Amino acid sequence: MAKKSFEIRLRKTVEIGSWEEILLSFLDDKSALPYSKVEMLMIAAMICWLPLGCQYKKQSSSDIRQALYDAQYRWENHYQYLQHRVGVKVPNVISMRAQQVEQEQEIEQPELELDESPEPFNPFGSTILS
Image 1 (cartoon, rainbow, N blue to C red):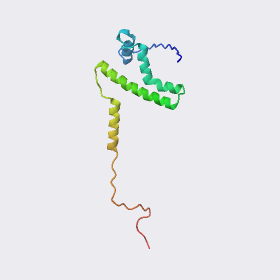
Image 2: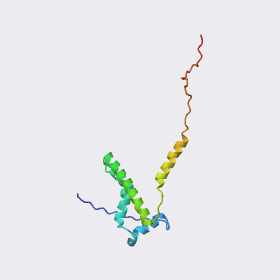
Image 3: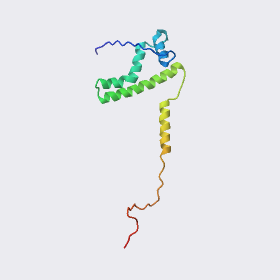
Image 4: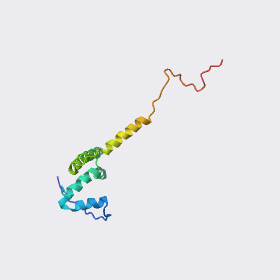
């Protein structure tokens, strides 16, 4: 397959002590990086932006769907890697929130109690006049 080179430069002013400053300081220190900066940024971009890139390049809906599946799979694997790497386990908050919403929906839906043999509705009443 033919190759194409890209050069993307990043220049950003951030507040000292912000999450952005922490991240960019980390990425700027070659000795701190477990992988090359390009590899790390490509992993993040593939997870977060590839489906939009596929849409931009007018890929088929099945290709876009596959990119979404791949992004979710990559994120879940990377999430496990990060927990292992930093030595901190945290619950998956997305799954926890989905379960919470599901439980709330179950609670909010009241059960209907019906008579054993309800009479059909008659808009004119049930009395017959002769």
